Length: 333
Image (tube, rainbow, N blue to C red):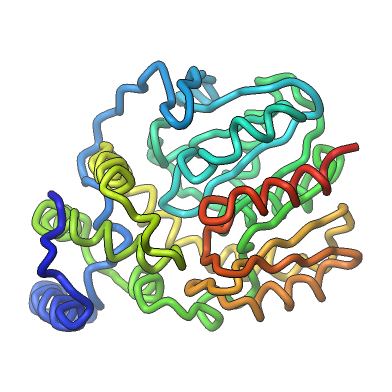
């Protein structure tokens, strides 16, 4: 559903308040609708995986079977291998501007993590250690013993976790808007805070998705990017296709419940990372402010920090030319 042009910022607080009241009447103690979860549908059937990824050019989509689950991924270029790892609620589309440029220098592998995008949505807990195990088995399936890991947001958290548990598998790390310690305390985005706090049942999320999903796509994208002129009709249409993919609500709800395991485990060990690490942060990040990037820089010994002006939480999408130059200069042997 395409959002109406009459939906403006003054309407949004009333929208959240009204839907939150409905939720509270239905479930005592719940909070809000979990806006990010409205981006997806609550059915459980498998998605069909298209043969191509359409960005600047058509790129074949490959399928690997890991633990009896299909994983959709892109694999372009030759040279030293690197993985591009998307964030919570994201997909390979977050890296569309990196495919052509990075493939001139590297072998670039871009998966949809299990539970997201075009990949299967297994009924698991989505604990951090489970995702680490999946990722190393994915590397094994591609016969890649060691690689550079580039992650955005939650994907940066996964990259750090792999480096901590399997340091021999990681060459370099690049953390773009990375996952910090004390996530809840450091969030500055009201939408993401609502997502973490909500206990709304999946059936109500599904109802909200059908009624307001298109409008919510716009709202979430405006929270993630600084330059809202980039949110074109084509971007909205693609994002609406993503929210309609089957089976993604349960993985997102499950992953949200595992934040405590991140805080009590990997987050306490971030200062043990010894890999060469580049931290990239959007100066206008509304999810985690740039001060969080400076904190991560202090935690990881020997790391480098580069802030990106006029960019939000996904700077590799907003300022691809600048970010690509930084990546190539840092990773290239």
